[in-house]
Image (cartoon, rainbow, N blue to C red; front, side, top):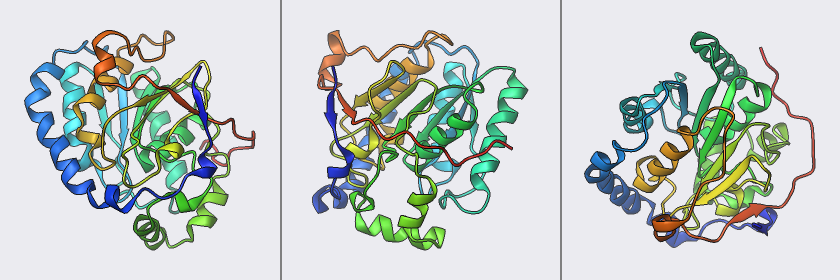
Length: 276
């Protein structure tokens, strides 16, 4: 039984965590290179498409290392294709929905979605509109459970408002059902040392098709963290329709904390995206 946590009680990450994001991300990236030979030996993919969405202010170059590794494992890793992620501007959400629908149609099978930070928020919303076209979701430090905008580091919050041209409160009201789980399997990867988004806002409620996996990571370095790559490979290797929660037994207990957390259940509301 997961320990329930309330995202409404989340406060911004500490200044120490935020200021250490840069060097911690560099450490994670530098540790990835020597571990790639081992990561390349993880279970091979079945060729299904994997759509990778970058975090806020990032573009597809930021996910290049991850996508190249997924290609080597045998998946068809696809960049998101919308330039820099500047938030939910214009009809971006509808265009992403159409993109995933087109990918599923092209490959004639459901698509797995991997989203870092804001990209994971988008991934969950896409799956709510296209549940039959989405195989599973993997989010990396994505604050979809954010009910209190004060739980994001203030400088990042101001940057988001400048990029979107909207008050973050207004954006949050437009996407009122964010905490509601998507009707597809979802693994939320989070870190209690995240220096950008409070970890309580990055976890799913407990259901039969959700799981929250804790890692030791910075926010910005999640796309280069070897432990996260291991979780991604484990999740993607599951046969379609045979999803299960992440196994922390054996040696994995040395890398992945045993304690399991889950968000308190949100109020059910109507979602805002519509399929095009």
